[in-house]
Image 1 (cartoon, rainbow, N blue to C red):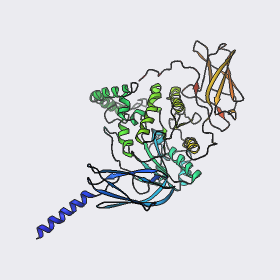
Image 2: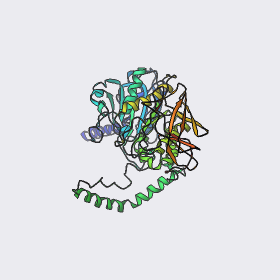
Image 3: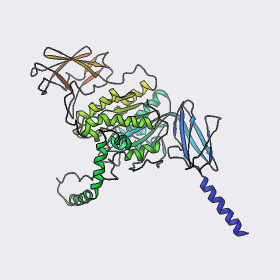
Image 4: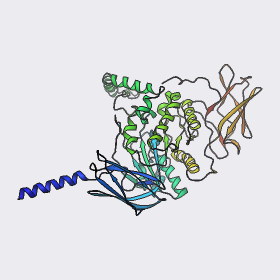
Length: 507
């Protein structure tokens, strides 16, 4: 009899363990769900198991059945911003998610300038945002939450990750993405609506790492990325052996001029691997319902800037498809001046804003550091991204969100007249005469030019170019331009010509 009871007990425990409902990390205590829409909720249970979901803001329960692999997913209607709420999930066991807010959910992604913490004490090369001690001490916003997706390289799309939602406070804000924090803080202070940020970032990564594999494979301009990567993986064992020898020699060198450490070769686990960060860090958050995305990246694609004109829009389209929102707002930062960043990457970003609907670009030519690729004034960046969201998503239609943008040119004898959009209230030369204009004739040789503002136009000329055909503005790695509009926003670098540039044809 004792054996029978024991057998029954073991069987019952096995059944209970098998039947447990499991939720992904992103559906957890302290999360923010998108308000006034239908949000996706999902998880795992036994094949065929019925899961009953009860959201705290509604008296209606929703029932869903797990498929043959145990996966279930359902869309649930949310109401206007508020909370906190609980959500219960009941099957053969029950799970309750607590302290849930309804509000606005944004995905923040890119490389190190988006990853940059409010106080990045673990990396001596960037010590935190300007006035980080005071900023963190004042960061008492329990309606702002953030979840970090851990860095992960993966051959196949992942279904989950390890992470928790952090409630913003002086005790937690030090590890918030700084740009995302200022962006979220601005939304909350302007609207009173809770804000959730999903932080999926990794320093030093190119856009192809964040793009689905088939998107790269099926585009003639992007397929060379995959082909090159396959070759690099084939050559990796030999390349890694040489890297180890070089690294040991570098470590043994006591010279003060030994230079930078050898760079690790590209291989199957490298964070620059194409498509593998998409698999490891974007795929697991799909199909979580988001309002939009903010993006700060491009530095790692500057050497292939012309290709970025194709790659970046393809990545945006990829994400919009996967989040099932063709009009998903996508706001990004134009790369700041730095010795490693050419004008062509900024042009590729400008081209994306001008050709891809529902995008916006924050110009940061006044926020660069020639020696530090991580400018510490992240507040300026977050607040310029915020302008786009406030105007397009939160009803502040009268906001000016961008600086002057080149529109057209007209040659008048020995001078060029430039017209701009976003300049109807006038143009401003901040701190003196206009700078960073160059001019060229048919020989394509550019010379420094004089420039003056006439209403909402700019007149450019040089005694060295009596028959001008083209003008460029802030067209170098470290420009120091001073052209703004009356809203205090800087002009994007531009060129009037379509002559071949150095990265054109580089795939």
